[in-house]
Image (cartoon, rainbow, N blue to C red):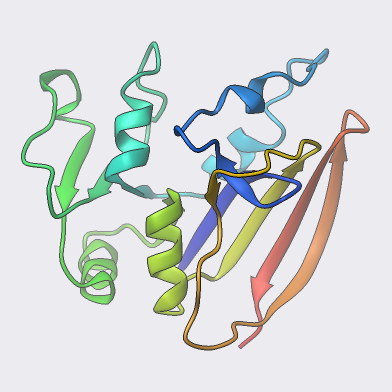
Length: 176
């Protein structure tokens, strides 16, 4: 049972531009059409928990990108679009209680996505592994991956992978 963050950041720690843009993620050459380990990661995941903003960004994609159940953590979202009713569910409330409920439903390994949701999970010390791919660009501003915490959370470096001599993917596990 574990909660994972799998995300890309700019060198200066941003996950999106100030207007929520992600175009900078797709500007790098990818001659081998690699998924950079995403499929392997997703094979270990039971479900995805994401925030409303991330969900709304995903809705702008040409097609729904997930074959795992998606839980949208939101206190303001009232309903889902018809075409994903069987693929996603709106959830709200206490994060620890939510994780327990999802675990009881058989979802043991959760992919936590979206800046605000990741920060909330970190605030509650509910992240077990962080996988961050550094993209060699300085955005200067935008949405930061990490926010303020009430206490330090220590992680241990597990491994590093380098793709196309450009992307640096670091794996960290919670040091408890």
